[in-house]
Every structure is written in structure tokens, then in C-alpha cells.
Amino acid sequence: MFDLQVNGYAGTDFNRDGLTAEALHHACECLKADGVSGILATIITDELPAMENRLATLARLREADPLAQEIIAGFHIEGPFINPEKGYVGAHPPHAVKPATVDNARRLLDASQGLAKLVTLAPEHDAGFATTAWLTLQGVCVSAGHCNPTYEILRESTNHGLKMFTHVGNGCPMLMHRHDNIVQRALSLRDRLWLCFIPDGVHIEFFALQNYLRAAGVEHSIFVTDAISASRLGPGKFTLAGWDIVIGEDLVARSPDGSHFVGSTVTWPRIQENNTNHLGLSEEDLHTLSVVNPRKALGL
Image 1: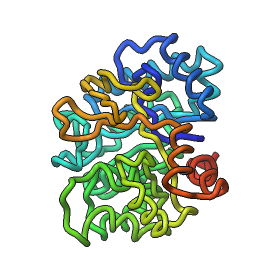
Image 2: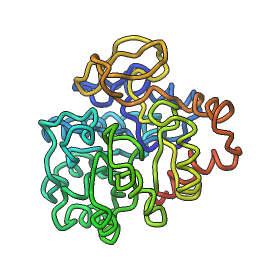
Image 3: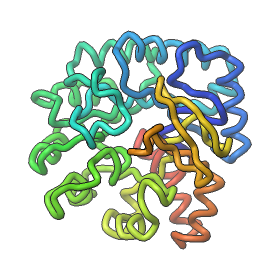
Image 4: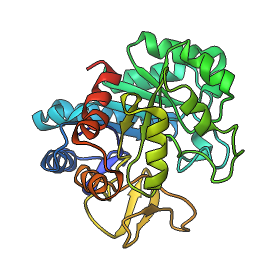
């Protein structure tokens, strides 16, 4: 698998202040052992100085570790330029969310030291699509996510460089308009966008994921894990960027009050099991979704 969205793995939280070389190496060892050929290490919304520090730390530690260089192909910056409304903001801290600006995007890219490959933002909070256009000129893939643009805004954003949609069916409220909602808008633009899905049976029930794949087409879709530090470890209490997370016997990552998901614990071996037991995709289609399309989307 080539995974575009990994917040942490096997006890290592990429969003933790004070990330150590040993912890990063351990995560990369476990990813490789689980059959993952490459990832984008994902940093999520926080105050800009905290995000800059975490990106710079990741870049420094990766530079010193050949295995990390092999596994971590780059960084996915998810936020802080997302929609702060409840439901759309998801597990991101609303107080740190801000509108997209080129100046702030430049700060994050500078901290990434050339390793930023993907940025998730809300098109409706990118005035004049200026940040999307600037990031595209820097060679960064721009993805819509944790957002609620109108169909017209989402479509127009693709004319300024938007190429992807982050975890379709998530990062949105449980209750929305039955037709004019962000899931339908994303699906309607499948010819312009790569559509990413979390195939854990929790973020999207398997029967619904099958429907989405039929609507989007395998050739336009990508599987991601949205993995957090609890991935591979089983039930317990963990963290993600300061969030306390409870992993139950069902291996679902929830906030302490159980009100919403906080990332996923699914792994590449479990995705393969889920496909065998629930999705029924051909090996060729699974390879396309998990290996070919993610690389193609980044131009690798």
C-alpha cells in the first residue's frame, strides 16, 4: 500500500510534540512489516507554530534515518484551513482553524523543507482560490476536505488546481440535506477529482463504500487509512495531537465521550481482510485503489 494519510502508527504519534528518532523508526519498521511501501506522514490542525514545529521535526528526523526516507515519501498537511463548523471540523480543534492564506501556507511549506506533497483545505475558506492556486504552482496536490462548499465553488476550485477530496463521506455531519450535500457534490465531480475513502467498515459501512466505488469508479478512487498511533495495538487509551482517544474492543477510535471518530486504526493487512470478507474487489482493483492511484495522484 501507498498511504496518503497516516497520522501515526504502532504507538507513534506524528502529531506529538517531542517526537523521537526511535519512535519514528519504530513506526516505519511496523509499516514496512505490514506491507506498506510508502506513506504521507500527516500533520493535522493546530496553532501554526505547533504545526511548523512538528513538520520541521519530522523533516529533521526523516533526514537522519534511511528507513524513514524509504517509507515517508512526504507530508500531508490536513488543516488548519478547513471549515470550523461542527460536523465539518471533525476531530480538528476549532479554535485553531483559520481561513487559507498564501502567507500561512508558505509558512507550513517552509517548515516542511520541500516534503509537503498534499494539503487538505476547505475551498469555501480560500478567498479567490488564491491558496489553492499558489500551492498547485509549488507542485503540491490540493485536496478538499472537512468542508462544505457549494457545488459551484467546489467545481470552480478544480479550475484553480484542486485535484482531490479527502476521506469522502467523513469530515461532515451525520445529518445533511438528502441530495444537496458535500458527498453528492464530490461524487458528481469524479472526472475532476481523486476521491479518497477509508475502507474500515466504520467510517463508511461496507455496503455504502461499494455504492461509492460504483459511483466514483475505481479509476478515480483511492484507499487511505487515516491511521493514528493506536493502529496495530488493540484496545486502550491513546492520543492524537493532544486528543485523548479510547479504542474499544471493536478497534474503533473514538473521542472520550464517544460522540465522534478520531482517525482510524485500520491497517493494510486489515484492509486486505476487509476486501476478502466484505468488499469483494478483484486483486487488480485493490492494487489500483491502494498502490497505483495514490502514486499517480501525487505524480510519482
